[in-house]
Length: 151
Ligand SMILES: [Zn+2]
Image 1 (cartoon, rainbow, N blue to C red):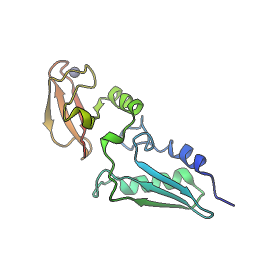
Image 2 (cartoon, rainbow, N blue to C red):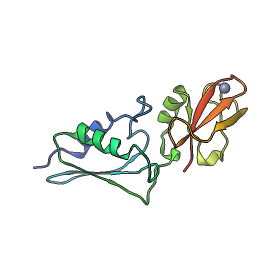
Image 3 (cartoon, rainbow, N blue to C red):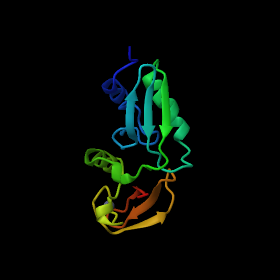
């Protein structure tokens, strides 16, 4: 008998938030690339933002807690890195409401203010609250915001 089915696993993973942006979860962000349920374990494959991401162990623990008591095996696919491009449009809107802009590849590196959508913005610091984000300032509405770096 299987420990749980894949739909159960995905449903539980929706309750694992990003550690710094609790409004969004790891599934919405596109960090989970694969879920497999075998007879004895749940196998999760994650797309890490970068190899030295300080949150990898945090993700591992939170996923194991969310899937308890199922035995969980988590691997990071180091050839399939997470990128801001993986973020769904709905999630992108949630991030904008939180003051975080996630650029798209097809926009080049054009950054818009998440509050007023102005392009009159400047990067004020290459590292934000997390190494994968940068700090920006909007000259139109005079508010600081963060930008998720394309990787
Ligand atoms: Zn603005």
